[in-house]
Length: 134
Ligand SMILES: NC(=O)c1ccc[n+]([C@@H]2O[C@H](COP(=O)([O-])OP(=O)(O)OC[C@H]3O[C@@H](n4cnc5c(N)ncnc54)[C@H](OP(=O)(O)O)[C@@H]3O)[C@@H](O)[C@H]2O)c1
Image (cartoon, rainbow, N blue to C red; front, side, top):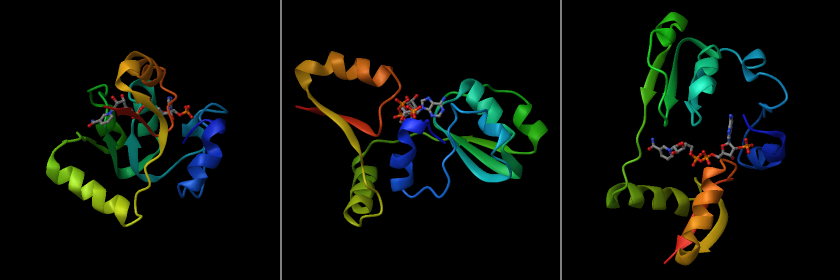
């Protein structure tokens, strides 16, 4: 799921089907999903519960509204946290070197421009990652 401006980018990453969440509510067109990865939270998290099949799982990397809603939909919710350590960085490096993960860098900034980098990140439209060079 993405906005139309990123549709081709997402297809390039391997998506077979792209849903433009700005065109219509995604829960009207997406059903019976096994796994949803939530990177948005809030209302999007709540609406995405309805897209899962019974017994499906929502994995979220952001804060989500706690409550009984997931149980009512017959789905599970798990929160995932990134652990930045040498072991996980080596594992990611191996995936990149094997060509199984292709990082996309939106923009590179020098450290003196960190405020501009943070503002770009806070705008919520970044495609991939922002890199700071030190
Ligand atoms: N738990 C952890 O360990 C962990 C690790 C890393 C990040 N996070 C958190 O995860 C969240 C996402 O991080 P991020 O790096 O992906 O950066 P982000 O800047 O929040 O995400 C930007 C992307 O999200 C898309 N987007 C924005 N609103 C959307 C919506 N309503 N529905 C669908 N897509 C939407 C945008 O695409 P369009 O422009 O096409 O809308 C853009 O490409 C952040 O809150 C971050 O703090 C958590």
